[in-house]
Image 1: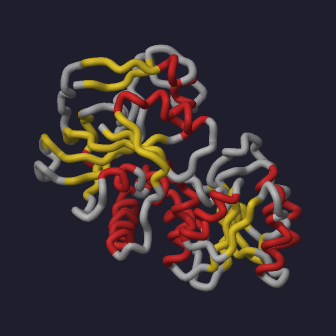
Image 2 (image 1 turned 135 degrees about the vertical axis):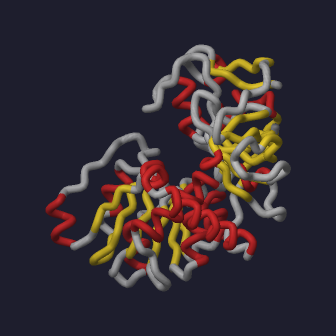
Length: 325
């Protein structure tokens, strides 16, 4: 079988090598999955460069989420032929034709879900679902401001917010991405390069501000979000795609009576795996009702992984980039 390995640290086109190797050997509580599609994430690039918090020994195979078919259930209790999403752990990641995965990291999917959609779903939708409903307690009628709305987690947050009756406002960095946000269900979408999203949110809410702000960007975006958060609102700290880690002045939180809420889905998943299974079941129901549908930017052939990661690094894409295996 073939798989990609990081053989030296650097940009993906330098770090990655496609190799031929033997099939994985199953351990206790593992299943063997034949990979159909795998999605790319920005942290895959950081792992290639040795700049991510998790630094496995060389060589290793990156890739955090995949869709595929169970070919060897082992002692997992799963069925051969089961269609699944799986989230393998380093050093044996998803950019491979076959992957051995712990049974608790394998989740069933319906027949109606395409391989590309399934590969694009787990990290983005689980993070957004956990953030909106178990961290921010989003409710019907709330005004939800989603930053980077055309991105992976942003596009998921727009769809989930709309599905549960929130009034969704989104920001994006181009007119094309603004239209994508509207197509996903945002009532209002703002090109932050040309308009002041703070004023637009205040205008939309009659000066009240957004009840929940979903922020995967950080930096200046977080600083300005504090100016349009409603009384008793919640700013969700998803990540720091903007580069700078902003401060949250406690005096400002006190004066406006809002919360800055950290969203660490990985820790939630570790501490409450049963709840993650429940969330997954709810997400599958939403998918089958067509309330949510993963936004896929483009599909690439298996041998195009370095090229695809290079395009992802340029931050000119939207949604998820998918590798067909």
